[in-house]
Image (tube, rainbow, N blue to C red; front, side, top):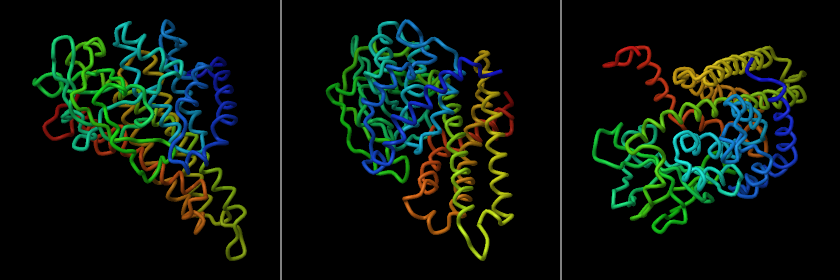
Length: 386
């Protein structure tokens, strides 16, 4: 059994926090195109939410990954996608490799304050010419004595305008593309780091997303996470948690939209009956609820395997793919049943429609997920099963 009474106790605390400290402000943050990350993260850090599965010696709770998965699912109850995504970057995208492979020194400097909420973290992998194709990044960190000198740029960086540090993937040698990269903790206040602009996005409006440039940024090699040249491998491991987290965060968000659509269509009349009374509507909503439960079962299975120390690349990839596809189908169907109101920005279904579209792109596009799965099945041209 994945969840226990201990999980439920933390879950109830998180539900209370979301109801009191987040959801009352979501509409305001959505209009502002940003939320106060330092203020919110500090509150979450004080309650222990930012380090559930992080090492105790750096301020975490030392629990297993099932607690992080529980938190991801619960964050889906936030009435927008941007804030949960930003929290997920802090807990399950920018910090897992640091927690697992970082030296004690670098973990004290960057992980501990990220767990306490004193630091906001972001992760720098994607570039304008290298989104899902991680191996082709161009940002480089040239060795210069005890330092790296970093040049390049990163794109679509969540938390980028507010972050205190970035978990940066950069080329540290001219070797093979899968063995020439390193993950480096770079303070955002470093000379030569420029936040070029905050991106104007279709959805996830409350989450600030930046383009960042690095111009001869000098960082001590002590800030490297783990071994030089292992960055690609570390990032692939980190992706397992990121993709599973992203899928889990969709569950309650999908259920929320189903329930909101049920209520709206029950009260909306057309041709002498409620919209919900039409078989095509209530059958479709039942199908969508079934799909959510199937996704939940897949995620829980993957979570159990991860806690057991198994490689969950296959299951996490499937979950990420299914979550993105389901989000597109579900929000499109529900928006249709809202009619003209669904096309206005004042309804929850329109926000969900815009926000959910990112799941099929961020953290690896659907097509990349399919390539990974086909490679594992031995059906990708030029690949062997394994």
